Each structure stands twice: as structure tokens, then as C-alpha cells.
Length: 323
Length: 251
Image 1: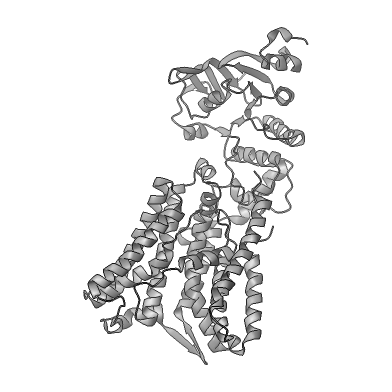
Image 2: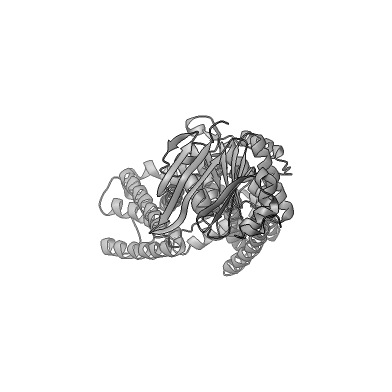
């Protein structure tokens, strides 16, 4: 049987060749820096979302989490004068807390995570806007770079390396680390075996002694952790954040994971595939601009990709999952 | 003869006053297959669940190696070497065969942060186990859902044996299988017996039970119709008794 990421690998090559032919700038060092940067934050999230989906769950609050965590740091430092390192840690703890709540609500109630996290998505979206406006009187964090010790944190999440004409952000490195970590976890640890099992057949997993609940909660917390990382990356790269940051991105993460071979029904998928899905998204997002086309086509393109991926996955499922 | 691996002596079980099983006894010797036969609702599942430690008998006594025991859960039964393979097999269809085999009991190498799955070790062990039971896979990484029903059943049984079972309780292992696939499972039951395991084979099909069984316990409406050695009755006798008609003997 084909490996889950085979389709994504073929699509990556096709998309790369396509935009390489459509635009000379695409394969320049400068161009590569742009689309790699674009893909990196989606890739970090797609890795976590893929693990969660293989574990049989969704997290629709993953997008807004990136804004939520960045806003916490922004508000705490610029308005309340909290030490920036402390603010970053508080933000991390809050993210993990929301992830744990998502997980507990899902396993306690047995409700679909699609609904539970849709609720947390809307709650966080409202909190982001209302609280930011209430405290700052505006919906944008400003003056971030004047916060004491800003320069001590900034390089971790937002530094860049210049190679020739190209700017390569540290987020690409984080993306690589996240992908390697995800592959390690999923395919080379006991926990990874449990992730497949709790998504594929939770009742069977429980029968053979897999800690189903703990595994699922850990997956939600991993997604929240990744949301925090991406929140920090976007905050320290631009030194600003909007109260609406991240809203709507959650579906792009899911698309990346599905294009990478994850089944919507859980139990099957690939971390490398999800990363390739994000790479495809980044290349397309920037490639359309390089080729000087109307960027409004991006969403239509994504939709077609998603449909193609779902057809392939459906076919796999039919072949494998006999009753 | 040595002590039976597991025995139930005059066990009864009532659910909220309704008697599901009344004064049933069974003894499973090493190297013997004890078939439990009965129609739906005869009390087969209740008996299994008592042997597997899922339910406590209302009255009566369980014995392991001749000593009285009181299982407080399936885990206690498992630790005593009594493994039950249910009809759903507790497998994850999309996962590779080797991952399924070791699920929950994964082998690892290394320590601390470098502790990792012993992928090659697990693969090799599973390949060897499957070869022993006559299943040759082209690819040990293929999802277990792509195996035939009989092969899946056999893998589930092999897994139970690998993790220390001395007595196997098989819950209708041939119920959903065709003739050929059933034969795969029956062959495997014979092999388990030859390896010295005690087997409780639950079925409602006398044609599956008779060729492999050493003893036959027939249940009807929660009561025993008798426990017979193979020498005591023929296949038509067994089939007749299943139908609840002892007058049909020697048909």
C-alpha cells in the first residue's frame, strides 16, 4: 500500500515545477526565503494538527491560539510592564491550559472535538478582541520593540539570516525541528504507537492497555504548544500582533494535514506529509504573487488540492478498512 | 491427570435477579480443547466473562491450577495466564501488523530521551510468530485490516499466546468466517493444543467444535446439558443436543 505522504510528495514536485516555470524569481535565493518563511508557521501547526488528527480529533481553536498567545505577551509587556520572559512563560502556560481544557472536555463529554473546539475557537476569538480593546483601547499591540529585554527574546523566534539576496527566518529551523520531533514521536516511540491506536480504534486500544484519555489530552496540549510557538514567531518577527490574528487559519492547518495524507476519521496519516502540505501551501501562496496572478485564486486552488487529497484518502480507506 | 489450568465449579450468575447461568462446571486441562456450545442466550458469554474476570460469579468457585481464585478484573485473569480473545479481536485495522501485535506492550531500546521502539526487533518477532502459524506476509507493515478474517483471528490468538497465555478463551472465533477461513483458525487451535495450552472454544457450530474438541459442554437457557468427552458422543449426537432434542441420539 502507498505510504500516506506519497500523494503530497508528488504534489510538492508538481507545484514546485509549475511555479518554477511560471516565475524566474521563484527559485532565486530571495524567492526561496520568502516561500519557506511562509510555509514554516503553517508547517509547525500542520505537524501538530496531523498528530491530533491521527489521534482521531480536531482542534478548530488552533488558529486563534496563535493570536491569543501573542496578545497575552503583547498586553502583559506593553501595558502591565511584566518582564518579557515571564510574559512568554505565562503565555505558554495559558496555551497549555486551554489545550488541556479542550482535551478534558472532549474525553469527559464524549462529544465530537469538532464541536467542542469550535466553541473554544469562538470564545478565544471574542476574548482576544474584547479584552485587547478593553485594556488597550485598540486592537493592535504597539511599542513591542521598546519593551525592556525585547532583544533578548526576539532572536529565538524572529531572527533571520541573510544569504545572498535571501532572508531566511529562524522559523524555518523551528519547522524543521518540529517535523523531526513529530516523526520521532509518531514512528519511534510508544506514545506514537498509541496515537495511531486511539485514532484508529479507541475501544481496541483501551482493551490492550493503551492510556487512551491521557494520549488524547496530550495531543490537544501539543497542538496548543505549537499554537504558542507560532504566536511567538509572528509576534517577534513583526513586533506587532492584531487581535484577529490566526482567525481562519485552523482550516488551512487541517488542509495541510489532509493533503499530507491524514484521514479525517483518524488512525492514519503522516507528519512528513503534513509538512509537505504546508510547503505546498507556502509555495502556492507566494508563487501566485511571484507569477503576478490575482491572489484571489489562492483559495480556489486550495479547495481543488483538498478535494484531490480527500479522493486519494478515501480510496485508501476503502482498500484497508474492511468491516 | 494434573490440575486443570482453569476450572469453574458450580458457578451461577444472576443479573438483577434474572439467572443467566446456573450451576455450570468446566475444567480446562493443559493440551486440551474444551468446546462450549449453545444457542444465542444460552449463557456462553456469561460463562466466558466469569472465566475472563469481567464478572464475578454469584455463587460457585473459580480455580486456577487447583487453587481457589477471585478475579477482581480482566487484568487479574490475564496475570494468571488466562487470556480472552473477543470477537472484535482488539485490533486497529489501519495499523501495521507488527504495531498491532505489540500494541500496549511495545518493545523499546535505549534509555531516557533516546528510548525508542525496537522496530526491527518487533518486526522480526512478529514475522517469526506468523510464519509459525503459516501466515506469510509480503509486507509486515501492511495494515492488519488487509489480512483475511481467519488470519486476523490467528494473529490475535498468537498475540495472546506471545504475551504469556496458558489458557485461551476464544469467543466465537469462527462465527463470521467462511469455510476456508474457519479452517485456518481451527488448524491454529489444534496447534495451540499441541503446544500445551488449554483452550476454551466458544461456538454455536457443532461442525467446527467436533473436529478439534476434546470435551464438549452444552449450554441451554443458562443450564448445562452435560459435559462430554469426545469418546462419549458423535457429531450427530452433538448437533442433536444443540437443538435441545436428546431423543435424536444416533440419528
